[in-house]
Length: 341
Image (cartoon, rainbow, N blue to C red):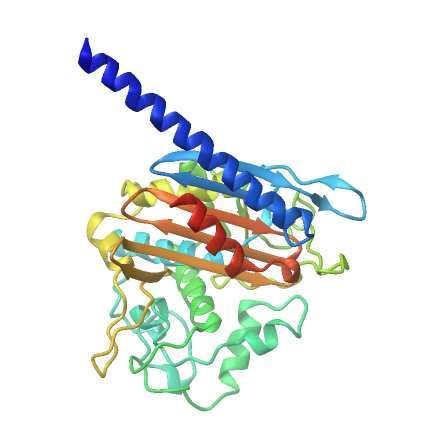
């Protein structure tokens, strides 16, 4: 009898704590919305329990269309964990190895012949980032980036010697995925990740998906600033917080990636001088007294995204916005983490 009463009391305390957390999160998110700093959708999970899940604002400001929790929003570089997961799936199938040279699968400039798949995954390849042309050419494709790389004459630094974020490297990984799987990047992700996990509002943008239901991107001043390029691997994915949470849970339960590869995914790269970076396979990694957390952000045109995951407590924060430069991403995440923890 006493045990039963004690269990009921613990359950009551837990429910009260969750309710208090939900209220605090709602107040925090709404304050950003009220200040015009957040237009988008948010999901927060604490110890495996969803404590906050909402959408605020408009999907299309010109047409006054409400943003729903199921409205796909462009996630920009949050696509990189999906690219890394796809490479790991191919590795598990025995179709490639991390130490393979990328040039084994696709034609690369002479200076990049010895860059490995592992170095592309953890941004230590030395291949120059194509960010400068991403913002200047509408309709930019993976082959455009490859052509641009062919116009250069050297790596930024010897492969493996330092960490330097490179969208180009993940575009090369996308091309390798397509070469090895004999499928487009979008088809491979759909068949091996999105459909199996039930991610019904997640897809890779291309000319055939241009008219699909999705959020339109805007600037702080509410001027049109929509997504307009066609590269994949570095970005290209539209999704929702609820779908991204399905991905989070699949990674925690080894549904997609086996245990050894999961450990590798969350292991920072060791550089040639012995120093350690803060990036594994598609995730930034942070270790503290509280344990290990991994995260990734994304930002392009009128879109910003954050995916923060506490690996020890099964907690996460996912926020997507279609009013990009109005969103103080770092402050928003800091405030939500403080509330969640």
